[in-house]
Length: 396
Image 1 (cartoon, one colour):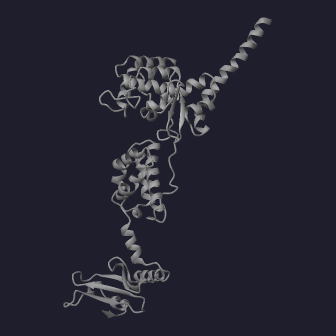
Image 2 (image 1 turned 90 degrees about the horizontal axis):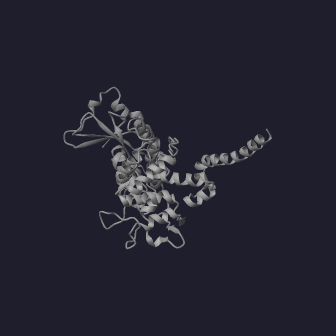
Image 3 (image 1 turned 45 degrees about the horizontal axis):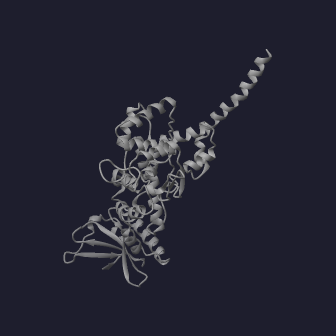
């Protein structure tokens, strides 16, 4: 070790003069001033040195923290950094411990697999959608990076690219961002990060709620296919959804033990309800007719697969064929729920009644059908107009 003014050593001399004696593996040049800054030059890398700060940690043991190489950091910058580190150490912040802590932070992929996914599986019914988003896009973009290395800016760029390059809908782009934001919130809660860099990144928030309502002719077309097609179990599921306004997952998870045919009610348990609350669905005659022809009472579930001794879990392929046969290729499964609501509203039922039957947790969700209610009220006011016109005709 040599105590020397590094500035004097390097001033006016090429850095290539920083060499290690032939009989040593390395040499340290310690800066004057007593701040602990030194320059280490190794035999294997002559001409280039590395700045370090030597200090005492909380356990009164000598520790070292790397500042940078002479090819990257000037002496002035190294001295300023050493002074800054000394100030942090004086307040109890050990840079070596901070570096170790950062090294222990998992990669995005590791965090998803070992921390987030087990947590989501026990708390989120749609965890498989999270797994799909991670596998298809998020893993390639961020999987190998440690959580603290993922910046707000690169996530914003990724969010924009999903829409402008990948062509995803605004809602799908936002789902990716919401998943990442939720993961980072958990990392903060679990004390892996100090703060969430993704908070308040703006969403696209475009109104992409497309609602298709069946008119009289379309309803006839669909019902004809549902009553005649050979794929009877899928047809019965569709008829049941159209008759009850239920969600697909609620119907496919329905069990006979939850159906009271005498009192005409179907109880959906909290585990299957989107609102996570038990709700009762009144069964009208068309719903009862569907149940009567299922022929599955010897099983637990209402809707059983014709290919195996298990209940139906997925019907999208069958539904695609049915809607094309009906000449309604645009019709989505969830549109049957919207159509059910339109049947009620257009026949004078109140939005409150619709809210209760559909199981909406708040009235604002049901307000989407308010324009249908307005049409019904307008039709009702026409009765007054008819009376006025009739009276005028009688006086003429």
